[in-house]
Image (cartoon, rainbow, N blue to C red; front, side, top):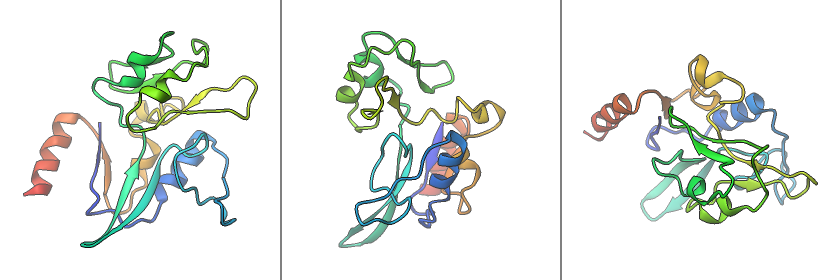
Length: 168
């Protein structure tokens, strides 16, 4: 699993850069023309750090696939193109996908994105660097580079214990 601690995040976006590099994702311009400063998840941005401002201050929030325990995207897929693997990763098989995008409609977090600009479009989302074998070699690219320790990867049991200690 993955643990994100918003109280430790400094908003450096190193996780975004590392994710794009590890997955060969293209940079994208935001509406103001700023280079590679996406405003939300897309086919070229699998994880993003967003700044939220509220009456009590500001907070950085990491958005990416939650790899849910019982993922709606998987249950909504009629062809089993999205599956929940034994290691917890919600993975995608492009050869099984029929392009219906039910996974997009079923995901409560609005995570899966469809490649509309490609004739043979695919669903794009975080797969915890499954394709690059980083997760089997140790950890996903986004957790490997976090300088503040805000994003950590490990066994869910250990992460829950760490989270409880952080709350204390």
